[in-house]
Each structure stands twice: as structure tokens, then as C-alpha cells.
Amino acid sequence: MQAYQKRVDLVENYLERVSLDKDILNYYSGRTVLVTGGAGAIGSNLIIALSSLVGNDGKVIVLDNLSAIDSQEPFNVTPLANIMFVQGDIREDKDLKRAFKEEPSIVFHLAAFFANQNSIDYSQESAEVDVIGQIKLLEYSTISQVERFVYASSGCAIYGSYPELPLKEDFISMHLTTPYQVNKMTGEMYCNFYYHHFGLPIVNCRFFNSYGPGEAPGQYRNVIPNFIYWAMNGRSLPITGTGEETRDFTYVLDLVQGLVKAAYTRKAVGENFNIAACKEVMIRDLAEMVNKATNNQAPIYFKERRKWDTKPRLLASIEKAKELIDYKPFVDFEEGFKTNIEWFQDYWEQIVEASDFPPGMSSAVRGASSICGVK
Ligand SMILES: NC(=O)c1ccc[n+]([C@@H]2O[C@H](COP(=O)([O-])OP(=O)(O)OC[C@H]3O[C@@H](n4cnc5c(N)ncnc54)[C@H](O)[C@@H]3O)[C@@H](O)[C@H]2O)c1
Image (tube, rainbow, N blue to C red; front, side, top):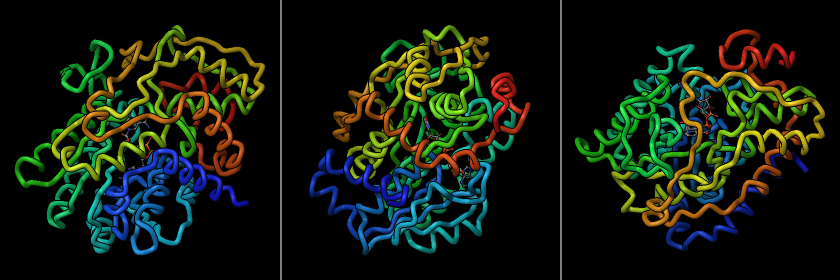
């Protein structure tokens, strides 16, 4: 069996488990939808789900410049008949014109300059993509009169420092600690502006730390893919902090469920809400789980917490998403983690090829990557 067929089956089985309402299935059937960032960690799962939902009479257009991986091979874009891949940039009119020529009625905007440390190292490009690129996309979506514009916002980013847990949507802080956080917040504000001024039907989904099949490791990537990658190379896992820190790790297909329901639900328009697992996982426990699953004997070691990382714990309230869009997380951490490890095993060669660890670039993982000595 082709490795991608396993990914398709995983998504199909998940959709069966969620058992979407008939009205949702009818809503998607035969549509043309656009996913920016569709070759990325979350987008690559969303496009499989949408491919199934729009069916043979519909089309899923992926607009992605492949900047998140160290490869020109879109290995994450499943070659399904109704998926059309446009390698292009949301800042470029010619690429936007190519995508909008297909007349999508729903836009899922997931493309982003990922993430915190990257935005510190390259703050101007971060704003060019996450602010200027997004404004362009909002313009095209308004002119094309799309029925929904769903924005992948970030709960981990926009709540700023020292909020009360669980994080509720009405918490606002002006104390954001990286350009990425500022830009994700600005992205929501622009969505709200286009909603109020031009009547563009936007929905702001605030994701919490995603994990699962589809995220290649790299110097600017999340802790789970990097831990798995380093452990599979037999290297020590670096913990930046005490290890007591927690994150609300959310299985990628639960995020996909949130996106699918958010675009469908009329009363979600103009709203913002968290999409999360609503469970905390401690980083030290995570490192131990990864070492056990990969049979890695190398000891864990500790580094200083990164200066911008001011959130020792993250836990989201998902009450609003439950009420508004009937969101419900289906996959617990143990199950999701297992599928993540399997994806690494199935795609190991492509992952090694695509992983982006140029030596000595990022101040966040410089120590780790040089100690690990792997690409
Ligand atoms: N992964 C998380 O834990 C998390 C948490 C909160 C919010 N989010 C948000 O969800 C979205 C998806 O996250 P992800 O983890 O899949 O990220 P990702 O980096 O894996 O995917 C983003 C994709 O966008 C593409 N891209 C970047 N710049 C582009 C440009 N100028 N034009 C076209 N494509 C471009 C990249 O090549 C990549 O494939 C992002 O907007 C991110 O801010 C993610």
C-alpha cells in the first residue's frame, strides 16, 4: 500500500467517527475550496478531508510556496484526483489570480510564516507574509464574494503573557512576545475589519499546539516533531525550561474537524473561538514518551527557557466552540501520538529530505542541532 493511502484512510476513518451531519455533507458536496498553506502540517490533513467532502464534482485548490520545508517536493500534498496544487505565494498577484480563477466559494487561510523564533530572526518577512499577504488574500476573497473566509489564528500566540487558565476568548493582552504573535493577532483584526466594513463572512479559529501526521521537523518547528526526529536519530532531547511546562496539544484531525464545522456554521461568522484538546501534557512526560516509543537511550538534558516563552502552562477553554459549532475533540493524546510516530516511520526518507536544520541559524535550537549533529 502507498504511504499516502494510509493517510487518506486515517482521515476517512476519523470523518466516519465524527459522523458529520447530513447538512454539513450537503454543504460541501461539489464545492470548490481554496486552502492556503495546504502543503503544511495542518493544511495537508485538511485537504484530504475536504477532498472527501467535496467529492468528484468538487475541487480543492492548494496554494503553497513550500517555504516551510527544505525541499521543492510537495510530499505532503496527497495526489488525489480532485486536489489541484498551485505552487505560489500569497503575496504574489499572479499566484492569487491563478488560485481565484478556479472560483473557490470557501477560503481556508492557513499559510503563515511559522512561527515564534522564525519571526524573531526574520521579523520583516514574517509581517510581509502574515499581514500583507493576508490583506491581499482578504481583498481577493472580498472581490470574489466567497461565502466563507476561515482564518487559522493561534491561541498559543495571541493571548499574550500571564492570562488565567483555562484561556477564554475574551482575554486580551497587549503584551505579546514575538512578531509572530503580533502578526497572528493583527491577522484576526484584519479579518474582523473585512467582516465589519465589507461584509466578508470571516471566522477566526484559534488553534492550540497541533501535533500528528504531516509536520516535518525543523529548526523553527514544534516540539513534538523535533523530539521524535531527534529521538529516531538516537540523540538527546533538549528541554528548554524545567520540563514541568505544559501545552494543550491538539490532534491535527480534531483541528480539521473544527475548521470543517467553522466554515459551515452560519452563527460562527464574525466570531473567534478556541479549537483545542482541553488537556495539558507536561513536556518532561512528552520527552519520556518519545524516548520510549523510539527506544532512544540518550538522556534528556535541560536548557534555559527561551526569553519569549512566557507561558509555563497552556490550557484552552473550548466551551465557546462546543456551543457555536458543536466542536468536540475525539482523539486522546496517546492515540494521536501513536499515529504521529507511525507517520514518521512511513515517511522517514521524505522527512529527512524535507527537514530544515541549517547549522547555527536559530538562536532557539542552535545548541540542540549542533549537539544532535543531524541535518
Ligand atoms: N501548528 C500549530 O501548532 C499551530 C498553532 C496555532 C496556529 N497555527 C496556525 O495554523 C496555520 C497552519 O499551521 P501549520 O502548523 O500547518 O504550519 P505550516 O508551516 O506547516 O504550514 C503553513 C504552510 O504555509 C506555507 N506558506 C508559508 N508562507 C507562504 C506564502 N507566503 N505563500 C504561500 N504559502 C506559504 C508553508 O510552505 C507551509 O506549507 C498557520 O497559520 C499557523 O499560524 C498553527
